[in-house]
Length: 308
Ligand SMILES: [Zn+2]
Image (cartoon, rainbow, N blue to C red; front, side, top):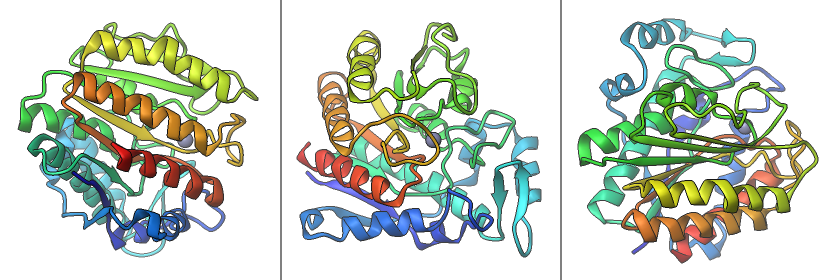
């Protein structure tokens, strides 16, 4: 059983303004590091085109139409203060969704051990009706609902270790106890949500981390809050919103994790997937803006996924 890696050249064609941290070079850095012979056993697959109808699993039709209408014919259009779209952004985001849903198919069909989707734009800030924070549609949320509708999953857990709170995923599942959303994130930090007191229908577990904390506090948050919640929920599938901007090199935040922490956290979630989810685990790239920190972290994460 292998770890599958989904990529697609279209993900490089979602363009952002010069100097923007969420840039195509992020995926080039990941591609370079995963070209090492240590990753020869990865099952590399070009992402399929997504089914646009699945966007409606997490977003209403008028919002989807609004995003589509905002895609420019040339140049770069502003969607909000830090979120933009270029002519190929629609195809990129639909393909990112296609990759995530295909990864869900893979783990339910048992054809792979687990899967990592190296796509952009990211998704976890996209709320039901708001594109924001570099995100257009919420890929992880769509994949969770896809697992429920297509494969009959009753309970899906999304674990989000991106350094920013996934306000979008929280918004979408706020009153849906069939999805557990667990997040570790720096607080205070963009987007401002993610307090412990935000619990939704009892299905939201926020574990905020103070600026300048690192490995100890992150691991404690997983051990004391996230993993017990997973044990209690017993998901049929674990989706990781895998942002790597809590790395100490990252320019957008002040949490001091190293690639070893992502290796460890991946191992913990694999163990829980084995215990509760028939080993079904899908990991989706979210943030990570220092190219070296991102590359080393993805290498540690994917290397751990390959160990199963
Ligand atoms: Zn982030």
